Picture 1 (cartoon, helix red, strand yellow):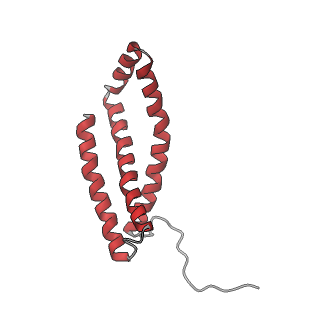
Picture 2 (cartoon, rainbow, N blue to C red):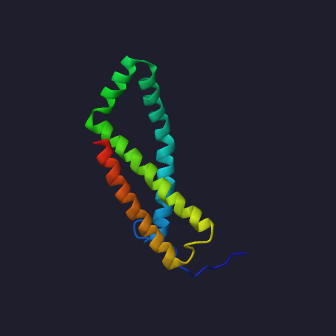
Picture 3 (tube, rainbow, N blue to C red):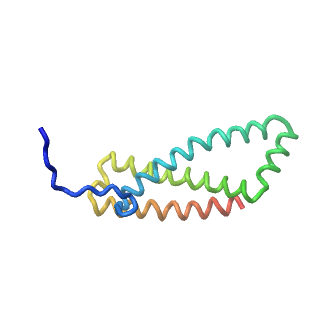
Length: 126
């Protein structure tokens, strides 16, 4: 049996306007993947630095470049975002911020907290 649906279907992702809560949720998943992948890189760097005094010097020289500092800062930004929005999701699981307006506000506050923490992390890295 064929059913004729009359609602419009828009599959062009460039024209879809996501709400701020959806953007926060999608970025939370992306930051989780970035954090998961970067753990291997950071553990490798830690193992080099703890192997010997020469290894520490090698890890220190690796970390002195601008590009590596930028990558380190981006990893920290992803980790901080994942942490902040993860706390937001836990609060939503507890029953807070479930309404549309409070959910939008909590997403904006999460973005603002992440920006402040990212600036602090940038000051520490550089």
